[in-house]
Image (tube, rainbow, N blue to C red):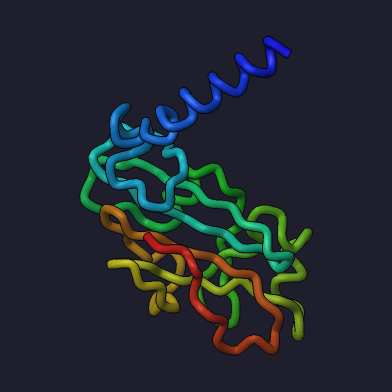
Length: 163
């Protein structure tokens, strides 16, 4: 009985302290990290993000710190450690497979097969990317997002994440 009372007292006393630690203990992520994910090279002056959504709905989020004013999308993906193959899909420079989906690159070109759609986010707003994957340049706190969609999904909705 004494151990249960001690545990309850510890929870009642420590829980409010732990909950307020964010404002008292200082930041634990990159200064510009708004996706709240750990950053590769967190001490770099700039940070960009990548979000990958598989057809199953599973997500991968990554943050990469970088020094120059911009980082290109392929370098961001490489530094984030997300496996992909760069290729032309329907005449547009893209990536497929990404993070093992689909299982083979041959499925990327198959008619009627799911496809990866690239989004870009800046200022908290996600939009379909207007340039090919290798031409996307990211500044501090911007992001790219890949969504694997069914072939009939002509205009997939943007990501629900804030950046």
